Figure 1 (cartoon, rainbow, N blue to C red):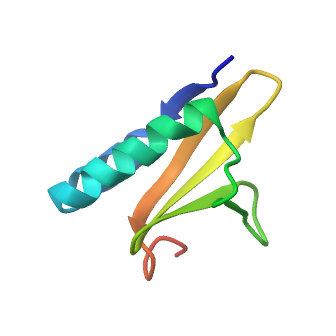
Figure 2 (tube, rainbow, N blue to C red):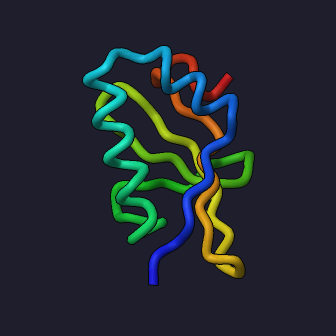
Length: 84
């Protein structure tokens, strides 16, 4: 059973500002989260709720709601800016 994906409006705008090749790789990584929301490559965030997934120099920050079977993507951006 796969999880539902939700992308916040702010996150969708952030994604649209990235280079097209990065957008394609990030879209694919986000789609994969529906099947496996906690892949081995993801890491639990320290100091805040959620997880992060590396996609080259970019990061996808997201939360997992296991009770409702959904993944909420909260931030997408370059690794030097995404945590701010």
